[in-house]
Image (cartoon, rainbow, N blue to C red; front, side, top):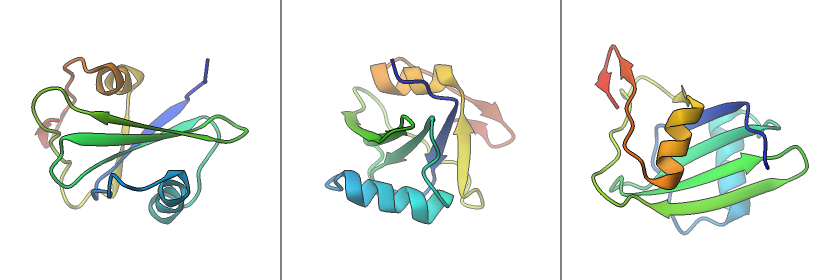
Length: 107
């Protein structure tokens, strides 16, 4: 089992053709570094596919997923990235509905 202590969501879309090296470069560009036991989530421009990069302390794992229904709603443009809860990550990974209440509404 891979331990994930923090989960981050990038606001800008990413090309879903990106391999693990390209995704890792994007993590470094957007977040400064790929930190151990952190997960980084990216969505495509149409907001119906996601890539999740997880640093397990030794290397990185990259998974891709198509959302089974609906589309992802982006955070406000002023936010560079947001932190997600474990429950929100599980919902995205296995396809359960989820939301986050905040001053910008439901995500």
